[in-house]
Length: 172
Image 1 (cartoon, one colour):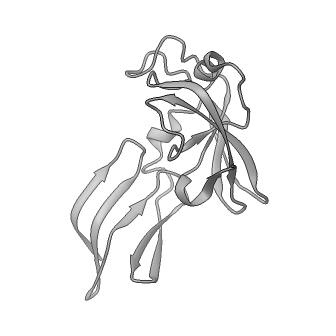
Image 2 (tube, rainbow, N blue to C red; image 1 turned 90 degrees about the horizontal axis):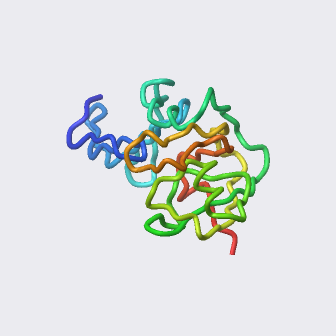
């Protein structure tokens, strides 16, 4: 197997590869998640090959968002979580959720260590699908990091979802 095309580490921790070649076959775009134990999925039409991702290779950017070691949990049932958003932060598409809905935006920004462009003025409930593997743990402070303010002390609980477009759905 060999790779051609663009390989890129995006800000969300994903690797995107334009083309894979396996034997004589060429496969289209693939994605590699930052979550350990998640599979690399390579698709050709309706067929998909799955390759195991090395457990710690792409984990560092996500891991640094947690204070201490997060727990990897495969959900036995659907889980209701909350997305705090506003300002330049969109409602849909984030990899990060909270098990708690904060009533005050300042508390959400503080305890979830939200970036400066997220005002947390709005909250949306989401349902994470049963069978999804999430990371669950304490939020690391980000106040010394570029793009965060002195308020971003962390200490709350956060949930990382590797593919929110397929695994987390807003409750309307």
